[in-house]
Length: 602
Image (cartoon, rainbow, N blue to C red):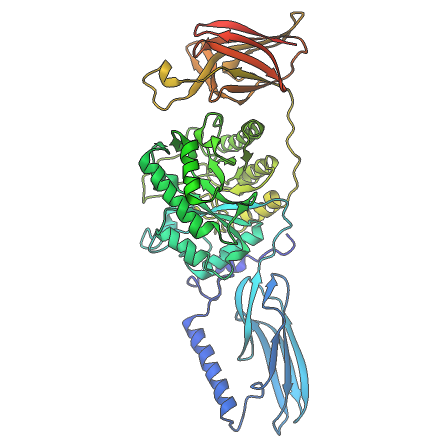
């Protein structure tokens, strides 16, 4: 970035939050306010009640060229002055912005003489700052962080819960529950100075959108978002949206959205959001519709489509719905995918594979798989960049996860993967979730490294759209079978079609093109839509097809004429058809016994 914010104030200040050394958070202290009041009073007195030594600047005409500038630009103050006294005027005129002297002029005027003076200086920090010449208040200037030239929209998950009356752990020292230390200390999320600094850091990083954790109508989170955040004078510099905290509103266990209680609560929530947030000018929109992000959307079951449509009709608005799914989830058959406009994942962390390498690989493989599936499911993919995961310092709730320590190198690599598979925006987990150490907000440990990486790797860098090798065919099954019909001990199981052991492809002359043991993840074979992961028992391995009636498979090549053999067990007796492109080539029947069924090519 051309105009990088200096780190010296962020990393060395020890003044209390809101003190004058906090970058971008300058608010006058009580003493400063009293001093300014005294100065104003003195000036008024000198103007209204002439004394033996009147202030020659009392009648000066001050002009402030701009009340808002970009960091790196200059503040310019003009001054027109006439010496109306009978003595020569000698005066030093210092220009101070945000308490820092930036320029000075030495003025000498004979009696009756007039002059014009221009003072200029470049502020060393961002934020709302007072402009003074000597003891005279000229005005206020907002110094905004420069934004990178963005190639795409970048959003970040945002948590407004720090500080009383919300999270006030450890007697206010809530950051002791994080492996990292915020540069801003144990701040209160409602502090206008903190909000302003966060806005400037977002600008610096190329983050144009914050997705705000929301816990229900009239909650403290709701009020803080409405009044403190959206009420901030600079809030309209970013776009904002709702991260619907599903477990906080509907419970931590899977729930049928068409259940009376769940549907009523969700409908009331959606009506509140529509009335309170969706119609604001600064609310985030995609395709002209207000964004709603549903966290852990896999928990919502039942007749989701009709329940969601009922809530939308009651609210009078249909949001652009982004649903959070676990990494490596097979999207077909997920009830919320039926109503989603886009799919994403909040975190690529998996406690069963807590290594840096696995963390990075999961991000890449998940986005690749979902990107290929998106066209068949009619959803967008919004990939996520994250620096790691570490909740080992949390004490206010029980956690027992082995960490993937957060570091800029992980963030850079997940950011590259996210950018590569993003036709639209990218999301970041997170701007300030300190308890899980996923934040890109500056810390004492990493400074602005995450902000810099966001700007350079995610927001600004161009991408080459993904390309895929191989050829695709589709299997269209007559129906799906609930897993509970095959195994009564399973509740809320998968929808299944075929238990596939072996996939063989031959030409019409009998030459083998592919002979793959499906349960071993064979190279070159990719299940794009309609399958679960490989499974194994004893010496056998397989992969269940299902989730929807359609399974889409990519293989290295398909002959123009030949055959596809499916070896396995059907979930029930039913028909299955083969399609390549838009052409249906053949149909056969499968049974619930182990057998090989053939579908003809050409």
